[in-house]
Image (cartoon, rainbow, N blue to C red; front, side, top):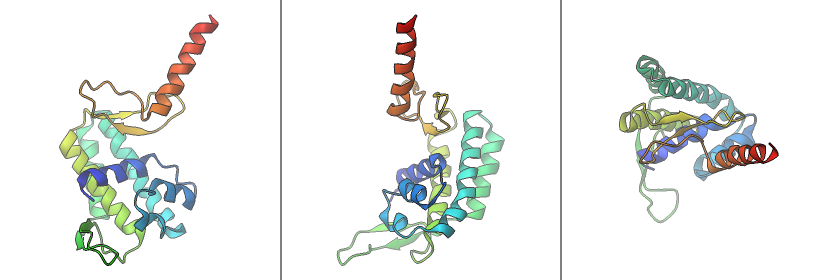
Length: 173
């Protein structure tokens, strides 16, 4: 993984519902090393991490530098990355970095990866590129990497839903 992947982990964890282990595994689906091993204890350990990430992004969207510093530094202090080089988990080398001891629980490594990812994202993108989905029924956050900073929705699904509803409302009148 690289820093962009860790940021993606942070955003997926931020936006996950985490009602049950299936939700956690769905949020981690791109990292089978974590998702297949995740259990109830990982779910309980990652809920407060997700809340800290949401607080961080709420401060970022509001342009609150002090709030972002406080939240990100708290995440990093609580879930400090401990990078470990790995050759992979098969006979053929697949060089990559784990953010914690590979034998640690998935929650330990996911928390460290998410803390590192959000910190790196803030450093790389500043606070002006973060947003909160404009769909009334969505509470997700996103990173706007568009050239004109025009993104308003977390996903095409939310954008389409809002635009179709507006179109239908106009057609009724």
